[in-house]
Amino acid sequence: MDRRIVVRPIQVEDIPSVAALLSEAFYPKNSWLGWISPVLKLGIYQDLKMRCMARSPQYSCLVGISSSHRAEIVGTIEVAARPLSAWSLMGVSVPYISNLAVSKSLRRQGLGKQLLAACEPIVRRWGFSELYLHVQGENRAARGLYSSMGYRLCRNEMPPWVKLLAPSQQLLLRKELSVKSVQFAESENLRSG
Ligand SMILES: CC(C)(COP(=O)(O)OP(=O)(O)OC[C@H]1O[C@@H](n2cnc3c(N)ncnc32)[C@H](O)[C@@H]1OP(=O)(O)O)[C@@H](O)C(=O)NCCC(=O)NCCS
Image (cartoon, rainbow, N blue to C red; front, side, top):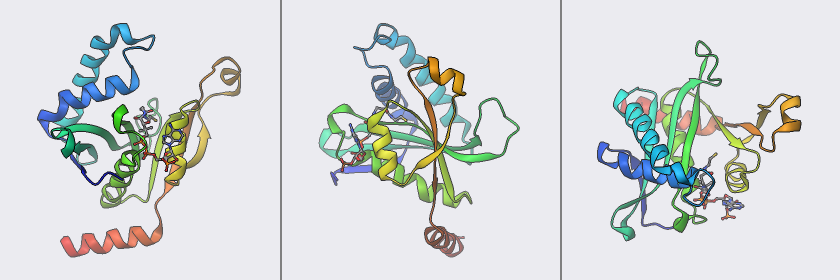
């Protein structure tokens, strides 16, 4: 792992760079959606700003900063307590990871792992002992990363008839945080609180 990368909570002035990073990671300029990337970037920027400004106690956006790239933002991740399905807003909230992205030039150096690991003590502080996320079936890099970090398939979100038609499957993964680490987090909380 590149030790010159520091992970810290996002600050308001980071929002444009994080939106640019997310836009490039999820809608690269050379992809079929590339031609509308400025519009997508603006949408990402506004959504992110709204989430950050809401200051929800169970929402966190982290950024990876590279000191060797003029303090450039090179990675990001969000974690929030929310119902698992967008359709069940009244459902039980669980800690859910989204918008994980690492700059192309710094991939495969452990930053994805570092960002995921940084979410674990956060959700433990919120009182949870598990983490959920969705990944597209064909996203090999992300699936490899999640598997190496202990995420396991919880369910395949697609009904069987859609699976036959859709090339891409949305998989729900879950990680159980170990009892040992939860106890550690609890003792840390007692000490600090
Ligand atoms: C997915 C992503 C965040 C991974 O970030 P990263 O910093 O490169 O990941 P890491 O270096 O921490 O990789 C850790 C492990 O994940 C797996 N992995 C990462 N990239 C991989 C790839 N391209 N192919 C296969 N396995 C991969 C490997 O097991 C790797 O360990 P190793 O390098 O020791 O073999 C990055 O590729 C990215 O930003 N992709 C675009 C956005 C995206 O798809 N986000 C996830 C949405 S669900």
